[in-house]
Figure 1 (spheres, helix red, strand yellow):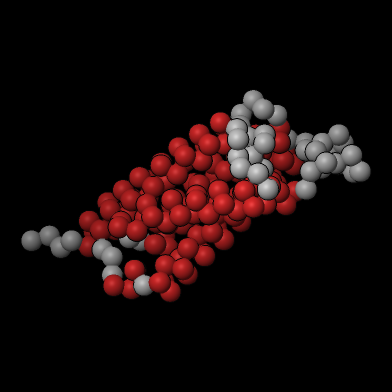
Figure 2 (figure 1 turned 45 degrees about the vertical axis):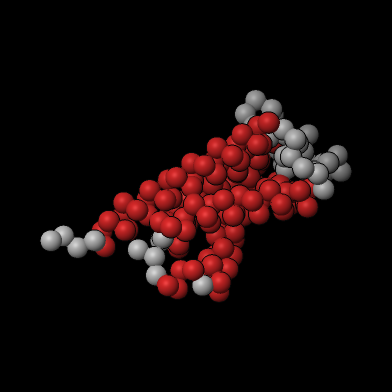
Length: 161
């Protein structure tokens, strides 16, 4: 059950900051590991030597090539986005622990990711793969986190008569 403290601005901002840090940390880690495993740091890859045209710091925000079948860099970015949403699901369950607020945190983190993506890349995402992945993952995380909080936390707090 939610408590009075769950809705306080200080608590909401603290939880949101923690969720954003977990989201981006997991996204950076998955993107870097995926890019390395797919050979993007090797000879002729996107990050190699003086011919490297891409900064690894942009990986979580890269939207020009995103998706399966679009190349190795696109696959690494897509995997990072999907697995960061899975990490967000677990973080919402462990940190927020409120059925009423679970969907709100999921949508807020995804909206902030969209805003940061636009700021960092100086363009709005235009590929359908990025939009479909973002919208579907946000919906799934919203519903799953709400159901997890409801069934695994709220129902356990109800005393049986």
